[in-house]
Image 1 (cartoon, rainbow, N blue to C red):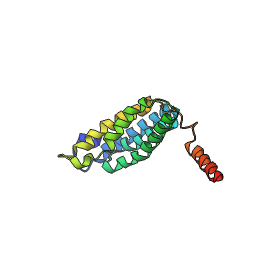
Image 2: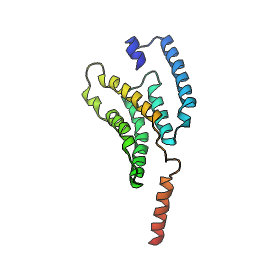
Image 3: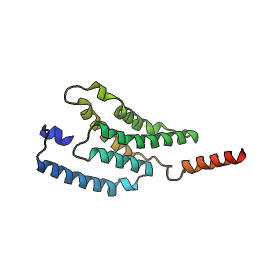
Image 4: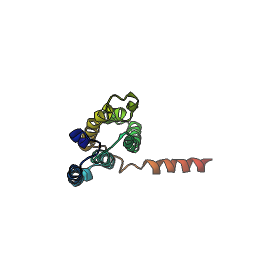
Length: 158
């Protein structure tokens, strides 16, 4: 998307793409080893998915479908926090960004794909949220094992 805004061409010259790809590879490595790997698991998942969308030379609307998996994990995390009577207020900015990103704005297309350009800053904002907040508890809270154990105990009771 950045290359499209800079060159305004449909077919890119090879040197800017090579430069951009090398630079984004370096940014990705620095982000991962500098910050992402020290975050809780849910934050790592979000950051890696967002880097998958943001650091490539060209990304279209359909690639936002990759956000469904982190969104589902965030919903499960929010349900678990509510079940344990903990606040979910810290998740509100992430949910607002995801609501904007996953809404059907491609039905409101203006000239030259305005909504794709509008979603890029929201993706960057969501990456900033995922890098700065700490969504802890996924590592120590085995939802699936607990639910499986509950199912087995219910089956044994029958």
